[in-house]
Amino acid sequence: MALRSAAAAAPRSLRRLLSRTSTFTPSTISHSIRDWEKPEPSANSFVSVRLFSGASTSSFIPPPLPPSAQQREKPEPSTNLFVSGLSKRTTTEKLHETFAQFGEVVHARVVTDRVTGYSKGFGFVKYANLEDAAKGIEGMDGKFLDGWVIFAEYARPRPPPENNAAPPYGRQ
Image (cartoon, rainbow, N blue to C red; front, side, top):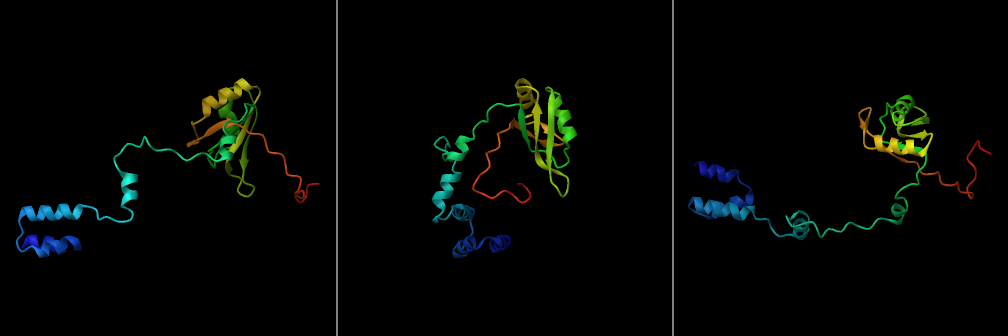
């Protein structure tokens, strides 16, 4: 009786299989369960086997990088650092204090939202010389500041403005 109630609670494909057999023996049940556990072939079976098989992933070839990513590999060393991943609560003073441990900081600035006054999540630190800037990157890249992991790298120069556009309102 208990076996009949277990069969009623089984999935429909297993119930169909169990209802066809008149006698329930452990071997018929185990064969039925094994048959039920086999995946049914479908159009996506090739994809799932390729993606999730236990085969080695050494044949995986990542897609090529777009030309824009290849051009922006590493910026030229400069005394100005770009710091990203800052907390919304990070202040300019805190950024200055933190990076001053690695050399003479000339200027530090956290870019803030005009309305809320909170950090936008990035900022700039300017060192007196290149050696201090390199120490600052080495010391703070991938480290925690205000509970967030920050990333420091050499700042890229701003691209020149496009001359075909009209000047922004208020600037002449």
